Length: 152
Image 1: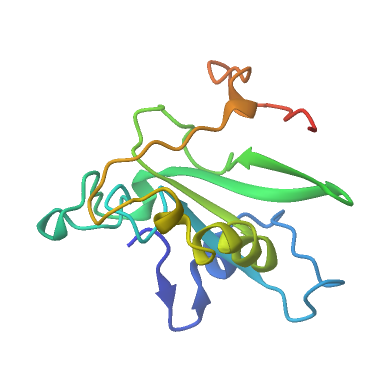
Image 2 (image 1 turned 90 degrees about the vertical axis):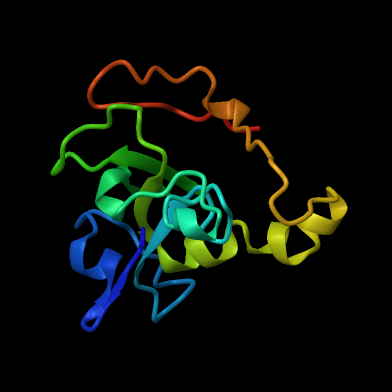
């Protein structure tokens, strides 16, 4: 499991970076949340076991690139490498990030709940590719990795 829950709270609350930002002015009960990439409900997820058709299974979220999200100012968030852990090798098949629970629950919710699969005619086990062209100019060869995403 990439984002395991524990008996004392979520992975992000227990192990996420202390600089993870929540948004209490939007969600008073907001807590840090764990988000995984590739999406948890897909066959590409590192958490999907091979015996269920998983394409990139890992034994733990510890094998993923580890990041956290911090709000720099209203409307501007930065994703940082968790410097408390070994840096990414870029051979990882998954990512795990500590972030605002509000951001995690609202950022892609509309895309998937509004008929994403039907709109693009995706069937169970269809291959797909997710592209983030705004990251295309980023240089991941240096440590720490830094990247500024241009605003549209």
